[in-house]
Length: 240
Length: 199
View: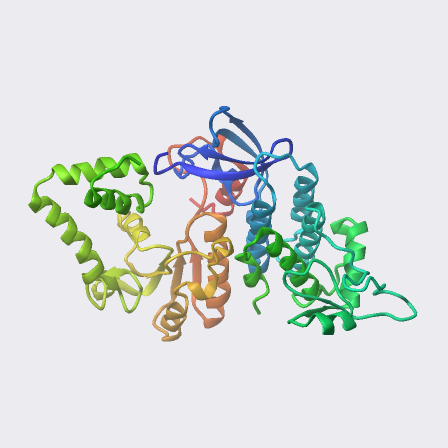
């Protein structure tokens, strides 16, 4: 490794998450250009030696850059959040085509200078990232007593807490003790909608930081519990 | 790691903590120090201590300085109305080598990078806002790196400072001198087109 070289972590459609060295990438005349910027969608050529963990990046051709999105601060934070969660959840060199498509879909849904699209994308990405990792609990059933939370005749409030894998009803919350947060009925309905709708089709008008904030907190806690560490970008995303 | 005598092993471990230095390089440097004369070793140790003891941040621009004000803030020949904002103190050297800029500087000590937990409050932005608020500055030149983080920082600063009535400009981005347009990617080329100038 030399001073102008860069170690890059990248997600491929067919080989999963890989790490490689881009020679002279930090030099102004580097052939990699903007292709190695965070979450750039590129066509990459690299070669891999069986005995080496790091691959050697040969070239990358830019398909789509996220450079224009940084004109909005929250969108820029959202991009870092996607990168961190992807890096945290995906094991090295294990293909995950669905996760790759999820990332492309949320990036496509982001619009420059439209903060609402960032909150929608973050919520959608978090929900599907947890689901694709196999950790998404049923959002309509109490983890404690098994009662239906969305029973039309007797709707129950739903609560979650750090370290607990699902939602509990008001009664179970009291008996389990500890601090907990409510996951509102509208947020649960939104989660259900997001699980059956492409991100671009999820209703957008009025999206802001407060929209589904409880759902994002629940999902971030699920990610952090399973990753066994706190996400660096999550608190910045929820700052006012 | 082979069994070195304790002082040597400790020195190797200390060198290994430096950026870009691995086990082999650390051993090579440690053996170089071991072979060097006592006076050379003392000078190295003293230079390291001096950096820690005698240097601080300029109270105005946060540049690294051995007194309250750095050389650029002390220099009355420089234009106090134009301030160039850079990410790191060593970026000033690159700008100074051009001999084109005669204003003053402001060092942010980083760029916005949520992935590394760096938000606006982690940067030296408050002092910049205060400097602009004093009314003497007419232009802020944002010379953060042409990366996603640098661009996000530039956009953030521009939104923060423009309402204070100051002109905010961004250094040009685009095709490097001596390169070939054929190999420029679309972001570089579009930035070059955006920043084109009349001849």
